[in-house]
Length: 320
Image (tube, rainbow, N blue to C red; front, side, top):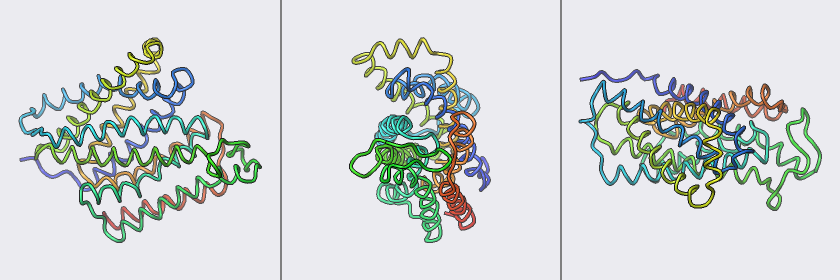
């Protein structure tokens, strides 16, 4: 019988997933202008599927598939995760078209607090009082990072360091990027709960086998759904995706690797704890934003980052 994985493994998988996902988001963002939101969303699934199947083949060769116990419950959880992830990715890319890369990610990363609620409702996973407070502190930090965009919309003045643009589109008094980003976070939260539920429903096999099988299954579902949609409504976009196969392959490979790491973490720890540590992605996004997109950071955003990091450290010290 295999020994239990080390207690720190889920943290290592999560931080690695956040780093790889930042690269994937940047690659997808660069494709959005040429492929549109749906086309850029499809890239991560269509070009990620071969890598997901490759990961599964490697794990199956080492351990076999006999310990997997697929069921209707597993199918339902996987479909839930796959569908909400499609919606979440599309909304995230739409938010990135409205606002800077790093602040768009900050809006999306209100997700951990939503996961804590959805995880309790759907899976019965309850965090300790200290862990719940740490998730709240980290989420407040994310919201603090997001505030300059709203301020710019209300007073019509640009923020320091060029991080907030004049005339950001709004819905009422709320920036449209904020609505899209927070809604994307809700969809990502529901998808994380779905994938966590699927992994738990797949039996008592090795955690890495259940995680990898769920990844391959979800990518197959997502690829089939979005390919059918594009064949029906936007065949020209599908042709353009295939024509841009080189950058799309990079985005797909990074997406598959990031998802593999996320799923490994989900197989080891509650989704809310995983996604809270995953807020490290904002630090990576900040570095990408400054290097690739020449987007600066205000003092308020920096304070939000510090609060977010403090919440993550508190969670790790307190334990879920």
